[in-house]
Length: 389
Image (cartoon, rainbow, N blue to C red; front, side):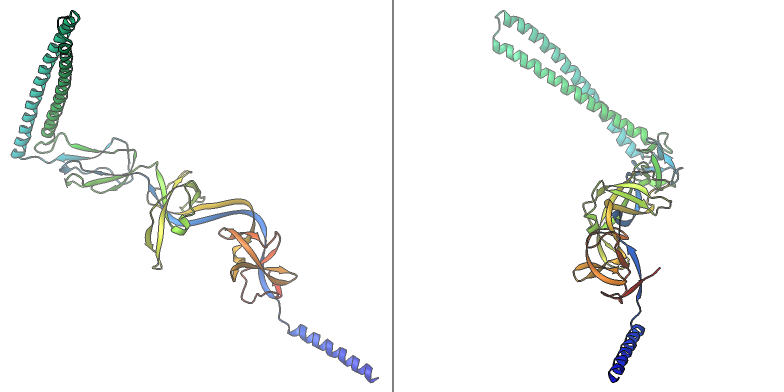
């Protein structure tokens, strides 16, 4: 009887201990999970950028004079060869006019001298031709020697060269005369009837009017800046550690430009030289410019507009994906917490390419595995978890 009582008491104590263990055991941690799946992945680097016209032309004054007021405005279209500004050359004083007139007379005298030399060399050439023809007949008859015949040929060749040199000198003298005349034609007293035009070299848009009002300008003073509209490009400075992975020809996307859809683009060039840039946090960074060309319609974008540039470094259509929020460092390895039978288990994995929110898994996981996203400090190997619905 006593033995039965002891057995019953032991069973009751075991039941009480089990009940207490169930009552006081930790409740499962509520976690958020995601399912491992296969899908499309792009590895992208992204930076801010701005548009710029590939060809900028700063038109400057070519002569000293009075710039007339420029009637064009920023944004106006211009055609190749269209005058964008006019300059009235500065009137010259009597001394300068006398110098220019003397220069013209000197040029005219040099021209007359050159023309006289042309006439003289022409006459000498005709005479040597006559002498050569006569010498050839006498040589065939055996009257003169071969040495005399060779001298006649050489003399004829020399006169040909002299005539060519005289012609060149005459042309140079004619150009000098035209130059001297042009100086006198341009420099007139008062408002010139022959102002100097500043011409647009290309079809494009006025980007900036550097000088619009009337004023005296000297040669080289910038007046207007023109952009060649069809050659719009995007420049963005990337960190050098990202730029070394960017190659010409890579696909890019222009985003955050104000429209609904990204604009396709392609990397044309990674500039060879880097530069130092101070970040918003005051940190020195080595950066390099990456130039992209639009492959789609640039829409309403113009010069120096802000955009975001995404360069696609790698693209694959069927890879095993894990949310980046599920991955953490465990020593020297990447790991995730998988959920099996209501418990969390740490699983080392190997990572391949990395997208913005998804990473490629090359080892350690399989499709349909369940992983914990954003694991808290309470999640440990073997801990009981409850999936948040």
